[in-house]
Image 1: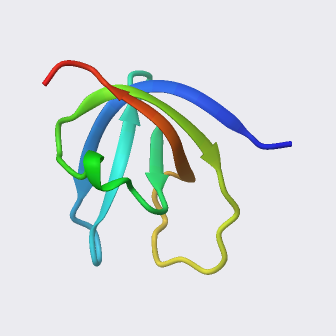
Image 2: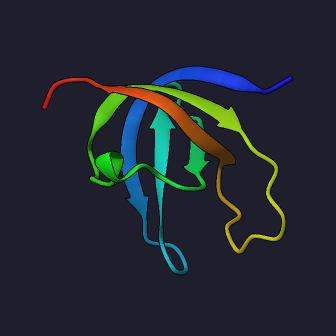
Length: 77
């Protein structure tokens, strides 16, 4: 069974190592989309995100929970 979450949060770019996109939810939890949708690759976007935790092999990133964005609604502009 998939570990799905529906969260509200803000997209940000983490300039750590090679850099990566992230979502920080309104409770301060850190989520690291493995393949951030192109439409969301802009720091400051706020929205509701449906995410699924994913198993990840070796990774250089030791930040947040690895997830796949399965749906989203942008709030505002």
